[in-house]
Image (cartoon, rainbow, N blue to C red; front, side, top):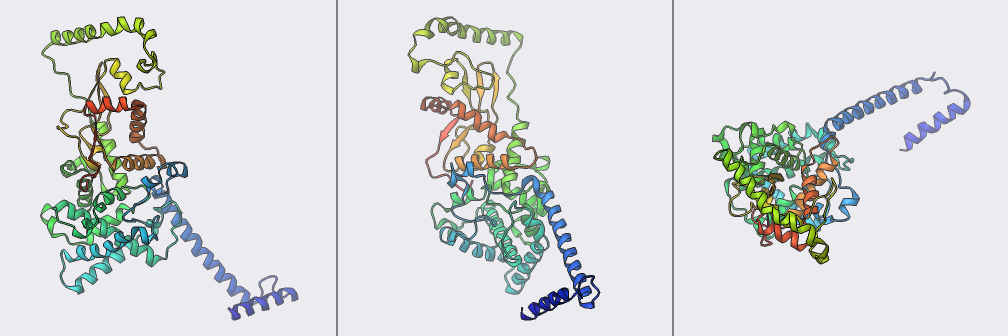
Length: 442
């Protein structure tokens, strides 16, 4: 530092004496070249970073806006494990999850390699693979990641291996005693892995799976990108996810992170669903059914205008609704609209995260004039954070995304205005309440 200060002092003296104005001295010329090379390198790096940001801009991970977070802060905050850089550093609150990452790294590399020399080589390959895409991974986040390269790379390796090991354990039905040592941990982990702020790039998972030896899946013949997509979908949706093949599987290169994959599958399932066709044995049956519906409605159509003025306030419903209005569930029931759960849904509502990927994921359709088919949704610990984070993802996407979840939540919020409304939907088994435990892994 003293030598540098001396150089600056001499140059200032030269400037005062008139010797440094035009760059005639050799020392000045060398300094200009060094500055030019440094600036050249910096602008090239900045241009590269900006290109990565543009490529990742459609689904970059960003913090949930304050106006959303302030209302439901717990719904967007991990409570067991931090994934990625946005929630690192809270060792007291997330210490159990951090300790588990190291154990899971050892478990993952031990699946195909028992000797320590080979395990060390695998870890070196992990680090090289992530380091090769460090700049691309940093651009994945909307805010600058204030971490040294070594720290950032190590974080992605540990987080990625932890997720892969957990997905594999769930897929093969292997017990996880360290995870289950804390009773709430499995359910909370299933929530933490779909939080909008708690994501790592999906390409990190793909690259790590390429390197990892997983003997349990060697016979499937799935290439690493397909395997990791199937593992995530099974984790999210159980057997429904396991059964997805071929065109039903989104390409891994088009997936930004786990929450993005979940949202893509919800949208795809909803857009492909159509109400079951009407079962008719001929035109006579169709006409008879239409006539029966009209006769059933006649008393309502004739008596309501006469009785409405004398009904008590709590028994009235709005006589008319604007184009943007949705009647409440109890109002619709009084209008003789029947609520139906989707066919093929089984006797009980789908549990866990799979509840939004059920037989009719978030699809609301009027199957007949008097029959409204609604998805069967199980209300439990995960339901609120799941829907809120999916909505946050939809609102944060730079490109125009399908707003399926936001539209569904808005529709149901208008439908359910009171306990009577909730009761009407629960009676139709459209809405079910869980026991509070949250079920299994999801």
